[in-house]
Image 1 (cartoon, rainbow, N blue to C red):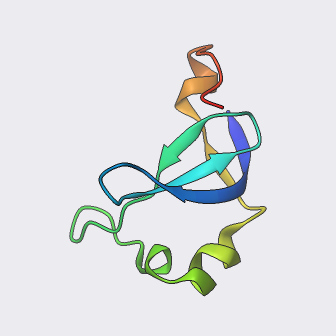
Image 2 (cartoon, rainbow, N blue to C red):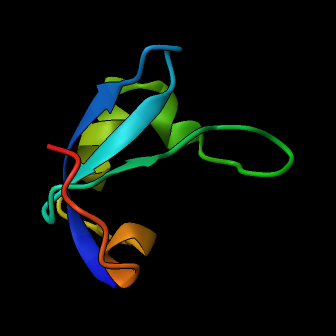
Length: 67
């Protein structure tokens, strides 16, 4: 299910997570060559993704909110 990005936070290991409008978190790692997400490395890049939609697997699986 598509959900809008509300904000970003760092996890305990220093990896960025998107905070979704549904109440779930989703990691958005830059991990080349598997995942190329250079935009996550800068505050401007992350800000450019606020309001965009990501597919939330947790919503698809009816999991409870993370926050």
